[in-house]
Amino acid sequence: MLGGRVAIEHDACALVAVARKDARPAREVLDTVLHGMACLAHRSGLVDGEGDGAGVLTDVPRALWARHLERAGRDPALVRTDRFAVGHLFVPPDADRHTIPAILARHGVAIALTREDETDASALGPRGRTEAPRFLQLALLLRRGGRVGSRDLYDAAVDIERETEATVVSLSRHTAVYKLRGAGHQLVPYFADLADPLFATSAAFGHNRYATNTTTSFVRVQPFPVFAHNGEINTISRLRDEARSLGLPLSREGSDSQDVDAVIRGLVMRFRLRPIEALELLFPPIVNEIKRMTPPEQDAYVQARAALGPLAQGPAAILSRVGDTCVFGVDALGLRPLWHVETADTHVFASERGFIPLERYVADPVPLGPGERVALERRDGGWRFLDQAAVRARFVRMRRDRGVVVDGLRERPTSSRTSRFAASSSSRRSASSRTISSRPRSWRRPATS
Image 1 (tube, one colour):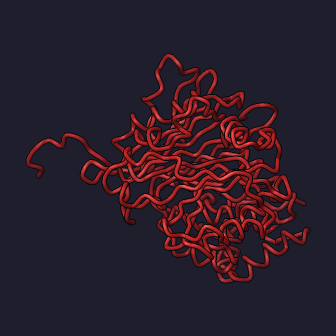
Image 2 (cartoon, rainbow, N blue to C red):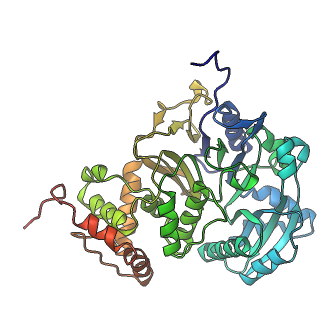
Image 3 (cartoon, helix red, strand yellow):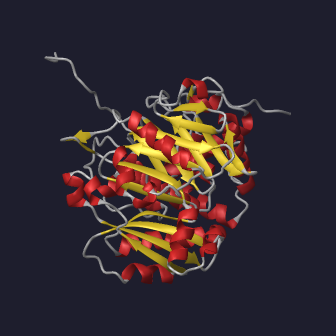
């Protein structure tokens, strides 16, 4: 028995996500996320009053970078092109300063502007100050734009982490990550960008860390480049084995969430899957849920489980953003909460809903159900909400377009890219595929004449 009352309980990580429906960048989005993180500070770990970690994932702050470029004598209009990108890296103090530019150049990425250590160490606690790496910010100009340019950035990030001791915090045409060892309230005092009134974003994720089975450090703080979660991935050994068999690079001594992030990026960039497609493949529904789906959904999800299997299982609520797509979800048993709150001008997803005032609600808050995934897509001038039915319909269409939706459990790949992916996964998972294929099919749709 406890000898006395526990004054403040700390348990689990905190997730907060806010997106403006009209997709217009605004300072208010970041402020709302930071407010939510402060209200959910009890969902974070503390050691001697020093937080386990906190971070935010935002749009690339283009207005801010336009000013940085203009002050440096560069063309501020670069930020409006699809060949502009921003890199954030944690670099050891004694790292060679020429290797990273050389790697970027090898992938057709030129550095337009370098900013270093635009931070205030006095905002950190003693451990944070001792361990803080150099914070390197790069304004980049890509030789190739669009998705091809994003793949160049991915390959460059892989090589940077393979060939140097640097950690790529984010390297993207769309998003930027700011994170530290500490608590959420230290983010604005520490990062000059976040303190700047010109900083604006149309969507943002926030994460308070509660370290359980890994040590705390700057590089393990979330969000990662495309992913954040609250919980545990219990099948991480299996996911790592499958990633290696597919040739997907993982992080150095990464946590479970770091390696899920690496696999998502690899599936999107190397195998050219859409973000929704990659997330549904990594977190497929359980078999009993598939039984209740429509016949086309059954085909798509049975094939998904046969191709890769349930690689990322465990009690976890997830946030993911790749480019103009955000995906939100909870585990199959609903053990880690994630609420959807809608206001007149925003969609909010969070571990707890109370930090949004009641008068702002335009609908009752809804907790995501077990295994549920929903999404936001930036299109038609706004962030558009996709419920679970729409996400599943999108997944079915994506698989059908690739020619890998099964008919009677027979794969029919039609494109060389899809064939390569099917061969890479199915050849290495033949035993698992046979097991799934041999299950009783009484729950599947009856044969028609």
